[in-house]
Image (cartoon, rainbow, N blue to C red; front, side, top):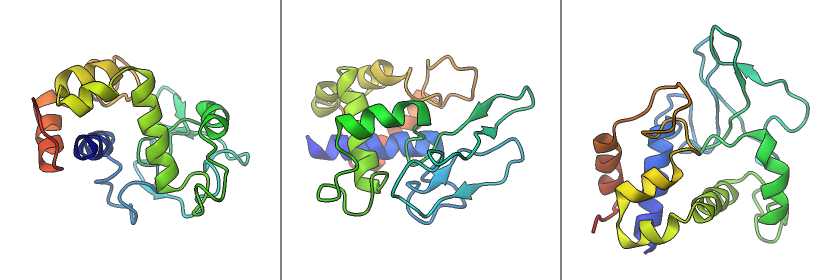
Length: 168
């Protein structure tokens, strides 16, 4: 069900804090990971992953941990080459707004969800099982285990329902 997929993506963006970022001008598709300085940042060039042209990763905590997570779903540069090729994200006919455009980011997120076997769960309205299946992909999800802040499942469920998803 397309509505459930849309709602799940909206929930992920809210969970990651991109769609609610005070800096975003494009519903989170333009957000770069927040650094230790706490200053929100966006990008405007969707032709490529924002860190793929030599930009250094950002220091995100006091221990020196770095990240280059970017976009609505906070994609890491280390995965960019693989998914750009697999999903033909650089094909201008498929993604005329650019390889890292909103449509390309949505396609990439759906592919990650598909790879974890969660797409049928989302379509069937098995929200909690779907979140559990993809929790290791997004640090903000309950059970992710990355040592970062994890959202409460009830809050995520509320966001998903508000975005038009249904639960079986």
